[in-house]
Image (cartoon, rainbow, N blue to C red; front, side, top):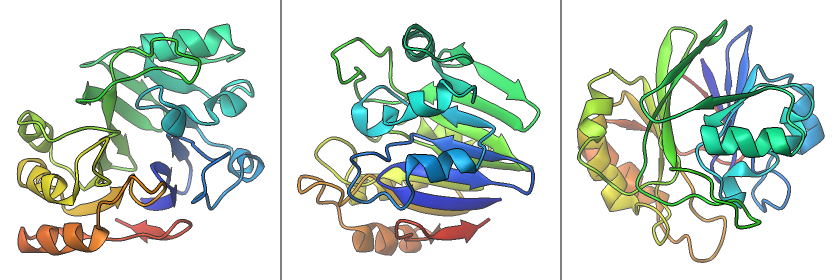
Length: 226
């Protein structure tokens, strides 16, 4: 599997046959390495949304209106259908959706969730994604919480963790999360996009390495292989 960082918390997970788009905040994202039209041209197999905040919901409707399956909580899927989505899959925490490309399992995340227009977005989530025989945990926006150990028990090839502080974990908390998650690879996200997101990726890399984790710092547009 290849993981391509698009900036902020947006990623594409690639295998030779499938592409999954995560939290597609592209328009209005000062870090974005890909435009909406370019992302549409990738023909994603699904768009996965962790929660409804604008910097994660982003351009989801641009994909969902074109028939790309949108997978998220019932509240997000329902909102998408009301606004023109043609194929939205409603899940909730603890549920798993299985498809030709693999599966996604929703986990808790300690945060909040509402759409830019103020509509309630349900509970925020993390995503455990199985694709190409590998397992990736996308934490969305969350603080550190002890049940991350249960997620780690699943066996993680990679964890994508917010480190920006202020709205989510900072780098030190995210490094402590690695002790619970025990991934082979960790990639930080949700930092530096806006002035308030002051978490230092170098601190996360140092603290992660001290815990024996392969921390990879990706610039927007860069890709790493698991």
